[in-house]
Amino acid sequence: MKLDTRAFRYLTAEDWRVLQAVEQGSKNHELVPTPLIQQIAGLRGGSGVHRCISTLAKAGLIAKVKNAKYDGYRLTYGGLDYLALNTHRKSSLLYSLGNQIGVGKESDIYITASPSGRQLVLKLHRLGRISFRSVKANRDYLRHRTTGSWMYLSRLAAQKEYAFMRVLWREGFAVPEPVGWSRHTVLMEFVDAFPLRMIERVPEPGGLHAELMGMIVSLAQRGLIHGDFNEFNILIKEEEVVGKEGEMKLRPILIDFPQTVSTNHVNAKMYFERDVACVKRYFERRFKYVADEEGPLFEDAVRGVEAERRLDVEVEASGFSKKMAKELERYVEVVGGDDDDDQAAAAGQSDDSAQDDDEEGEFDEGEDASEVEGEGDQDAQHDDAELAEQLAS
Ligand code: ADP
Ligand code: MG
Image 1 (cartoon, rainbow, N blue to C red):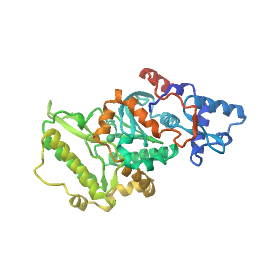
Image 2: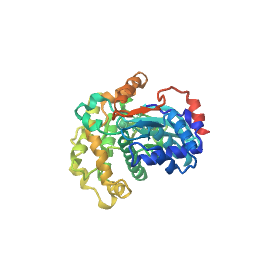
Image 3: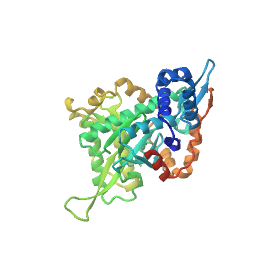
């Protein structure tokens, strides 16, 4: 699902209002009937609304759907992307959109620039976009979701990720600085570094290994377990050691938080041990490094948790409720975290993306046998400079 910003330039204020109206109407309606769109948008004179609807449908931002009782429209992922981009733009967080730098299993990652020229990463969550082969056992759960519920889950994932990054960043953890959140997107600091997976050689694996274990323990001491602590979610930055010219040190930076859980979770111990084992296994396989000592152990790590410093509790209090966490967790359980196959496919983006798009289609818009019209061509390739210009205008 490529982000196509061509229409950004020509949408009028009224088009935006209508797009927002479809979004709002979607909260209670699987398809939003035209009169409701008109009412929410608060635009007088029917023909104006019809023109907006037609523009938005042609651009693939909304889609016409027919069910047994009436015709209506629903927001597409493209439309949701536009609304999020526009919110970031209006908050002066985003000025232009650059290259896509990553296709995660369930996210698209773009480089963007802020109005002051700072490079930022835009992560668009795309839950529901998983390949069938990795979820065969759970097709039913996935099939019975509608486009609206995928979007809802993607929003939850973004909200959760932002909430956790915010507290972790504030507390001095090595995570990208979170800059903004809208709908299914998170805007964050761009870390100019490669994932551990891409690092061929580590001069001193023992040091890095210890640092990663230290990170897992420090998180647990604040009530958190990352839950997907693997070589794809650890970026490795090469930094000069302060005061020692020419001496470089590898600094790990942790990303990807939608599956983070509390140390009070019923399966916390299992998640903790899985994170630990994941690092150990990778170091052994890739760098032939095995640590001398056992652990760290979950029991030891959580012994130091101080109630008033718990970040899990803080995040919950800040609005990401237990109920929301449960809804998202159900999905994560079914689909699982990053794994080698999916990441490898995603890493080789250029030829795999076409295939990805095919698989995606299976769950995509209009699963439920209703007829979909007006989807734009989402796959067109664009010149990046042109994109930048479009968003800026
Ligand atoms: P997913 O949930 O799809 O795995 P991630 O958050 O792990 O998404 O991001 C996917 C990839 O995008 C990462 O492996 C990394 O290469 C790149 N990436 C993500 N966030 C950043 C960032 N802030 N700075 C630089 N690269 C990033
Ligand atoms: Mg990841």
